[in-house]
Length: 214
DNA sequence: ACATTAAGTGATT
DNA sequence: AATCACTTAATGT
Image 1 (cartoon, rainbow, N blue to C red):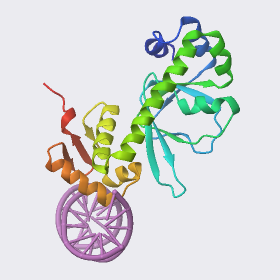
Image 2 (cartoon, rainbow, N blue to C red):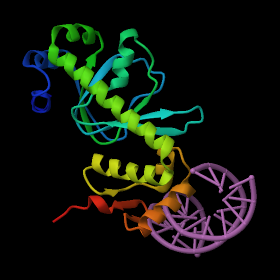
Image 3 (cartoon, rainbow, N blue to C red):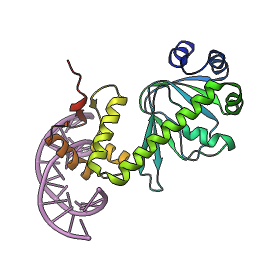
Image 4 (tube, rainbow, N blue to C red):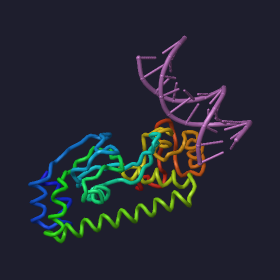
């Protein structure tokens, strides 16, 4: 883990702190599609993402999923931070979206490090505010935009996370993540395809805007 | 050839 | 925008 940790975080965290992370954190290398946290799980560690991406979702009582945001390289989980003080239960669900490498840090270090390392303090507050901004944007889209633009933003975000412009996904999977229905997604995708924003085939959606430019 | 799963469509709320 | 009921198309065995 040492190499990647230093590669991704030297400019964010001070050297002494990186040594501590290395000493106290557990390195994990995970395939895509692994569930890290279920709603209700007790939070005991906070993750630092080294490579890959993690999808953070909410779920209602009927198992409808709602995508909240992604954790990418350099990110940590604001939810974990907000819960860390009182060993609370997780309000969210976390699944690896890609093969992911991360470091798990026991929550006990949070408080100590905030006092000891100014770079940690900055990192924590920073990720907190970044997340908050993202959530505000998400709420804005939920409240004031129609499904169509929500879908398009979702496709673009997902494509970017996957480092490409092609998504292998079905309409009903999308519907689940956006808490909509398959029929609606199909119709909107057809419209997007007609507008030339997207190329849609069975199990395959291409985001035109993000095509590799040559 | 058959079954299964993904996607398209019209009508209704 | 969601749901229903049904059709059509693609894919796996």
